[in-house]
Image (tube, rainbow, N blue to C red; front, side, top):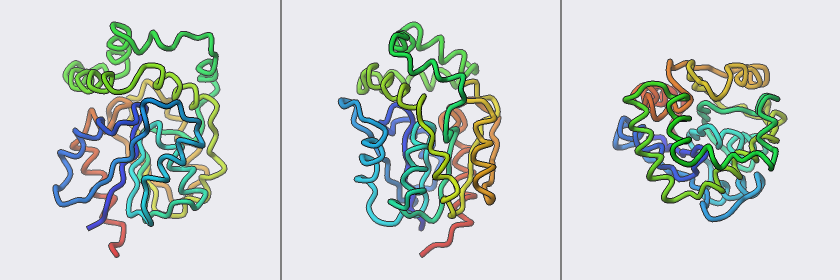
Length: 232
């Protein structure tokens, strides 16, 4: 049986993978990479942090949102080997319209405190039932990850560009694109399409938080991907 390595979104805790893992077969071995919540790591340090938790050659890496560039850097540089990689709602570089995130004077912290955080979730998710489930997760995450850590990671993303590593992803590579993503525009997938000829895009009609809002559908995509990866 193939092993999955999950690389988390902005919170870095892996909590957001819980809904998804309930829909995956129980006999699938899985490891969750985590980033420290009490330290403000540079991007290079974040890559090193993930590398230290990954032992040997991997079967399948599932990298969500924030961890997409981390996985691309690890795999593209050859520091980590994998039989396949599944990228979810992520990017190789953010569009220019996100450049404002790097402005230190911008009080991003307010957006991650109640009631503003709930307003943002309402906008980005829309569906009330799915939003309620995600809000519950966010409350747990907020107890572990300080707002300053989340904001620091957002500022890191605004200046990242890992496109040079994309052509080095020779392993099977799928990209899960949520078609109702109000956070990342559809064009972020263009960098992947242009650089990875064998890329397969799987679209799911939901919000940016695709693995959380559509865990059953996402799990089905992962199982479909696993079928094309040779065991052993």
